Length: 407
Ligand code: AMP
Ligand code: GLY
Image 1 (cartoon, protein in one colour):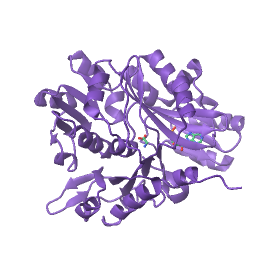
Image 2 (tube, rainbow, N blue to C red):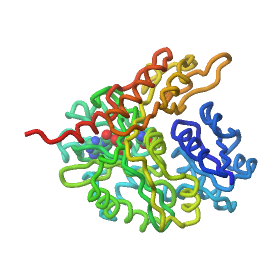
Image 3 (cartoon, rainbow, N blue to C red):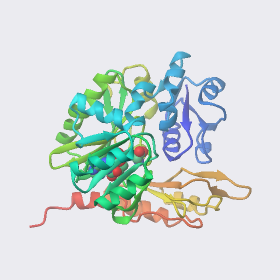
Image 4 (cartoon, helix red, strand yellow):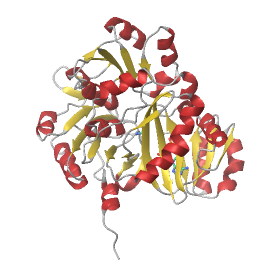
């Protein structure tokens, strides 16, 4: 059976790597990247052209842009199986205003909010929530369209950089959790909970990025918190939208329970690298079941220990950065037993080179969180490229959680 992965980042490398381990599965990717090329056949052309050329039996989509643009409707119109939501359902990610009104209508817990048609209108709404206040551009912004303003002056200067419609919302304090479920239109199969690290610097300081690292630890949520999220967030959404594909709820675990910060309609990046490294189940049969609306009786198995993925980024990211820097040390990093997922790389004339903001995702799984962190960072230290930077505290929040209560 042939499975085509759409995309060319770290999330798609993890998907292709995991699918390639399923017996009887031939993996293709469009466009792919040099890491993906080690486990799959990379093809060019539009996604539909790639599916036709490879004879793919099933396609799985990584990034949000093609989903919001309607790739799933296009494939289904041609009778092709694909994992992802319709363009209509993808609006849950494509428009934050649409999502907020959906949450309100379905009584899905979320931050109090109001919307504005333009920044000037938003100015009048600032006082309603006090400070800090959260400002969000309506459309897709690669994780960078959200500003947390701590006082009026910060809010005013942030608004000067916005254009178009936006959401103004209450600031929520708590621990952030990424909760992803695979949906087949009727039911949802929850994946293990993960935590991303969105800020660029240690201690959650600096501007937001697409994600500087993630870990997947069985202690992130209790069984009752998982049930609360399924019953209050995931199941009502599947019921209301007949959602197909990956539904990703970005949640804040507040004192008043889990509240939704955002919905994504795809797998997270870098959450997927941590998730699939830890997943013990075969992925291909799960995707096939999802495409056939047969998820009902499935359950996923996970390795008992946690996984950690540390993102190595280009100098300057998330602002402007240079590319074309030779990358050294991946074989040495992988010799430790870690997996190095390629996010922004290309094959240069002599070396593998940097080709994006987030370059690699160094991922390890071990019996406990301290050893998984240690293993991932030992592998990180084997890799180098000019300007490389990374957070040194990926997973540290999990260590605090598992520490016994002190009296
Ligand atoms: P979003 O794209 O909506 O997930 O926002 C990006 C990041 O901004 C989130 O991952 C949070 O870290 C932060 N954030 C968003 N909304 C809120 C909120 N209402 N309160 C506190 N932090 C938030
Ligand atoms: N890691 C955050 C995201 O994929 O949106």
